Image (cartoon, rainbow over all chains, first blue to last red; front, side, top):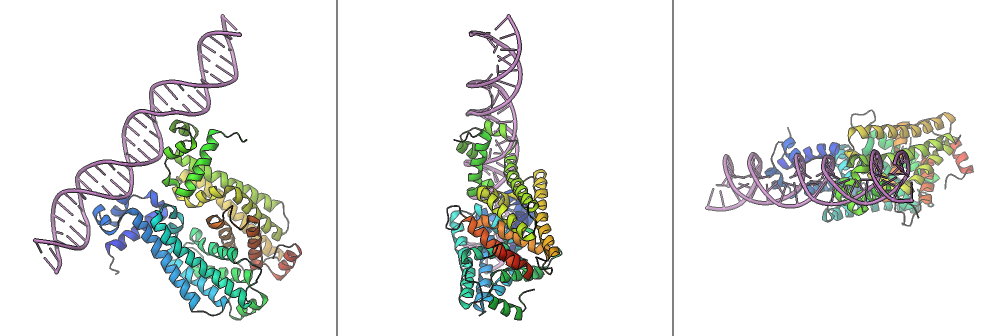
Length: 205
Length: 205
DNA sequence: CGGTCGGTACCGACTAGTCGGTTTGTATAT
DNA sequence: ATATACAAACCGACTAGTCGGTACCGACCG
């Protein structure tokens, strides 16, 4: 049995509620009632409702960033890096799906002060992807004629969009999905030389 | 000079406001004030604030659906179809970027009655993409081992995500972006046979 | 032609209710 | 005694929606 602090209980409750009804579709009263606490308890733990929203954002992006950076650092070949980074994301995703939904759908409602912090982390994440594309072009694994910017956004979009349709008890596992994503992206950007390495390593279907 | 009805003016105003502040970040009072009308005027044209949100959703998805269906019907080879469908979307996108932002970020707030109508159209759109993937597998243009479902969602995600980062006055044109998307997707899913046709038609970079 | 009738388009003060946040109170632990 | 951790009642601000009214326009009539 997991010992759950009030703060964790509030966040868990809020995640479930936000995901289905949206941030503004859920009142603080509803959160505290569902979480089995009170207004006092809530405001004892959080400065405001916005602060709770921020916390949800931050815990997610920080985790993604950490895992992605690790995937980048711990691999040498750009091909290994790309695959590891994709796996890093989808692994986090499996646990944080509720967070990401709130993260992408409700970020317009974050007050500027919070938004800036989140924005920096998102930028850092994007730069990691851009870096690996550049690495791959330099090493001859990826085709030099592709645009780093567009390709980066394509990858991010492809992966992130999963939150709109993936269901944990659906018929597709995250493993299968990631395998396909790897295949699609690698084939889309690799040179002939890169493809040979990817095939050797079974990164493509 | 375009003659603009009150209804159009309200929608235009709401789009700008919603996009930056989110649906719940904007009150009806703010909409009517910005649009230069009144509460009465607003409720004369719209049954409710939700009805306005629905209208924005519907005008966008209906247009996308129409153009995509046309692209599917007017082309024969699956490769032509895929490219035409991508272009159809990105073309609509250029004009409807504000709509799509509201469409994807605020759909949780649509009342069920409206949501169902929208959902059906989205499903129809998805099925068109799935169909063209199946067509391509049958004709030998696309690799049979790829999952139709995952590939479809990958394409939709990749394309839709553009609304998060594309800026009309940015340095990348929609034309360039679409070209890259075509290249990435086609290379990702085509057989050797398909690749030859795509190269002949200059669909790949 | 002027008048008036009816309907549509629009206005803006008003209301009932909801929401985020505060204040006050209380039990426990140190 | 004092701090912590929560509870419950409460408040002011704000919001979506209403409703009685007005301005205008085309149709019909005398």
